[in-house]
Image (cartoon, rainbow, N blue to C red; front, side):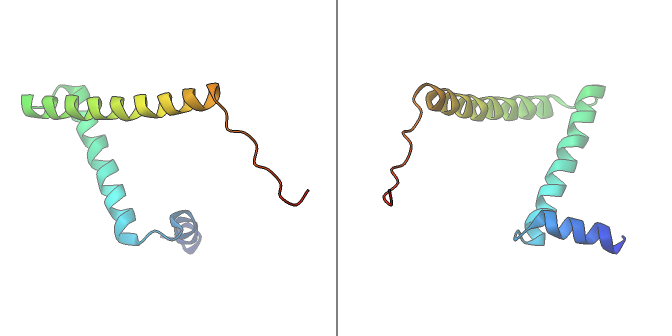
Length: 85
């Protein structure tokens, strides 16, 4: 790996430990592999159930984020007071 690629990777990683980054990369790669197998129809029923469970969890997380954003749009926070005015 070239030095500039490694330097960019470290800059993107910030303060996160390499073990944490490696875990994220492994999880992303496993999800990609499972998605490809799912799309190819090469999965067992248990894997389909697991994928459905994960999709439900992601849907619940996204629903919570959307609800928070909608509340914030409809009830914006007042601007902070400038105590130095």
